[in-house]
Image 1: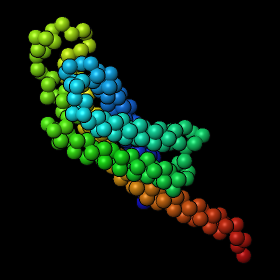
Image 2 (image 1 turned 45 degrees about the vertical axis):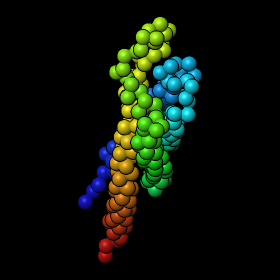
Image 3 (image 1 turned 180 degrees about the horizontal axis):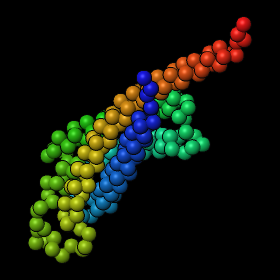
Image 4 (image 1 turned 60 degrees about the horizontal axis):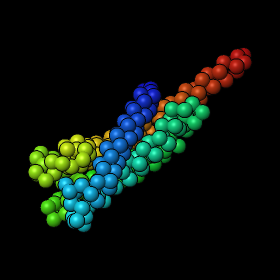
Length: 219
């Protein structure tokens, strides 16, 4: 039975490519929410400038860190898989090791980050994360004394920040699932590559035997 591992290689590249795209999106959303928090926390009354210790931004930082990790690992794999000069298709063990080196660390980082972020979110209301705070007060109307606040202050951006922070954490979960799928595909692709290589070797041996037999003189 002949097995063509090419579709598995394509699926592998697609999954890692999706992980790369998700990581870029997570990096953008988590980075934006953290930037807004760091910029406005010291003067925006909706961010409690006199009570900065109420907020825990480590979850957003962890999301950014895991996104960068997956993005870099995915980029390395895609370069080796898609650039013809580096394509390791003929070195299936190297390709499998490269895929495992992408999926395992990335999967571990994303899983730990999702768990860590959920733990921090569950500390509310004693401590709030950017997500719990913005989602809690996104629909509140400004107080009368806040009506004269300059543009960019108040809680006008809380709804979008809530959505972005939710996307970052659930996007990280999706990335973990994609990496888990790519890990499974990588193992199957490695087995398929080994089987295909064995079949090619067997066909080459059989062909040589036939050629040698045809060259034997008949008496």
